[in-house]
Length: 426
Image (cartoon, one colour):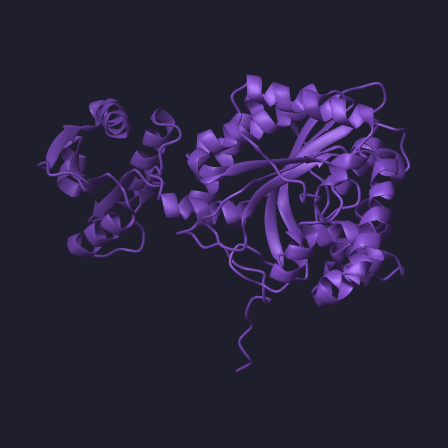
């Protein structure tokens, strides 16, 4: 026998007992996105490597250390997408969605980064992201934050997350701040951790995100980015804060919030939680007005966010939401009635769309079929034997409540089930 093949480290299977929670999460997110008028876009998993080098920044950790990049048979350098924004911008520009238009888009799917796998962080992970184009005021910044806040309500997580806000100003603001920050940090370089000393030379703003205690102490006396913002950036941020306050959204100003991608400017935000240990960010985004031009298009204002589904799943598992059972009815066939059982299932599917119905296959006695019916999670077992077929009846056995089995005529079965299933879900 050959060696057993297993999954690649950090690329996990999502098993049948796990997928109901994923589907529940995704359905609620789609509902909120539809309520705000956002349209779905689907982009390829593979892109040209230059898209991410130009879009994310060549001196970011993602591009330097984490991308899955290879040459294909034509010698082209391709990369499994590590994030969704650059791909969304590329697709929108390529297909003419940005010319004299505003767009509200969303996407969902797997992303890939070669990181050390840990709870909530995997090498293949899943994101849902929102991207808006063509609107430059703080009102659209506020809208995407309000949308994300409504997501937490829909998921029952509002009391588990905190909104953190900052403004990065424009490129000139950040350049002036960068010079001041580097000069200060070099004076204290012996107190910085190794990772921060490396970042100091190539991407110094990322030092602000350090979790090292010694580096955090140094940063307490460091120059503040807010002191370097131009008047336009200050006004934009002030209006955003006012809009959020008017909408009743609580937030915390975080001067160290910079995000790990080069394309951000002005507004940046994160939703964080204390419930997941070190993996505390569950949603992050901001404004990236320069990215479209950076990738070859015309200057276009843009703002968006992305959230990691694995981390949200961890949070939801702690809340243990009550999910609808994927199977509501289990049809047990006793004797030579398999064709009638399959036909009954089809008639019920016609009458009860959206209701999960499993027909027992593979034979077996009454006890065996009832065990499988119970394990399926169904609310009712529908028992069909030769006597029931002869009388035009079906035996209905409740599996999740203390009630008696009863015989019902098939002609009224669908109406009876519709009423009782609706009552059980109310």
